[in-house]
Image 1 (cartoon, rainbow, N blue to C red):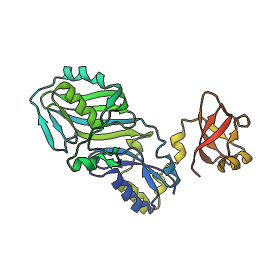
Image 2 (image 1 turned 120 degrees about the horizontal axis):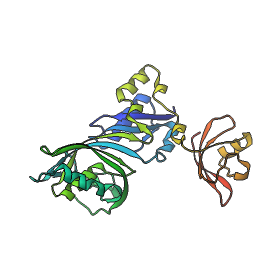
Image 3 (image 1 turned 90 degrees about the vertical axis):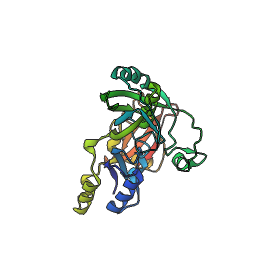
Image 4 (image 1 turned 60 degrees about the horizontal axis):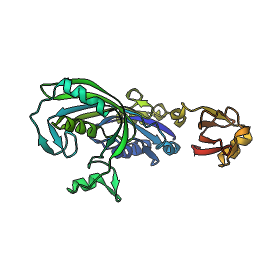
Length: 296
């Protein structure tokens, strides 16, 4: 069993909980995921099965989230599930909020929250946080492509926001930092990931639906081929001799390969039998085609 399943993660599950559940449903241990989601979050979680697990770290880093927020409070987790640390009576107007949002678009620096899976000196921050230990964290650069305010109630100080961002972004930290900038504090109240790794919510299945596919012997209806996530790359088709050499890890002469274009460095590679083999990189200085990752 090889391929990718788009899972609509339920609230209350960790990403590892989803993997553990699917190992039981699919009767296989070789499963991984990309893009960890907090337990309170729902939405798109790409899950990789069999040989496709090799692509866990190769998916597009672009993600889109829809988050609920509330101003006037802060918490130790930066979301509504945490211990309330501060409260403020300051009221933020829609005009004030719209004036601040553009400051958080682009390449920004973000300090990872203590309740996160980031490791410092071999220890997860959330493990330290649960012991009441707070350590210094270095700011990290992340890309925020756009922020769209869907709704905001000046009376309740609550709203909904859409954020398109790069890999490693903490949405609750953005909300926390916006609240800090406005001088009132803020927490995330809900989170749905609507897109990740080329998957949208429409491409995803619930755990119950995946269980039903497995029970009826139609699990292939939930799986997509790993080659689909590389559909944006130009294709190379090898002849029979090249296919055998490439599968054995031999670097091929670029001059002997059709469809090489100096505009592109990475390619999807197919064998003479039209079977997807993997991803390769063209080294134009050495005139070689190198294996990046094979999936067969």
